[in-house]
Image (cartoon, rainbow, N blue to C red):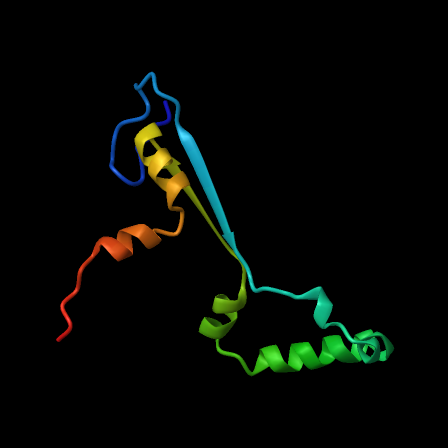
Amino acid sequence: MVHFTCDLCGQDLTTSADPRFVVKIEIAAGFDPNQIREDDLDDDPMEVVAELIQRDDTLSSEDLAALSPKGFRFDLCPKCHGKFIKDPLGRETIRLLDFSQN
């Protein structure tokens, strides 16, 4: 039997009659199609690919890993799901923390 717990509060979701909510987050480098210029359409695509490969050969494995897409999956109980929906980036939580001005 598969066991599920809320990834925020730790509540057991396997035996609970409440629904389980799944949050999937994908992070990838952004691309703005509006940045394509007319000159870009005249470039030789094979030459551009060769330049990208040469550029990537100079990057460390950490740099390449930082550029690659990443995905996350979280199981949430109904209470944590409601909190997540209201503030998915946790901005309000950060505002509630009151740090002194040292």
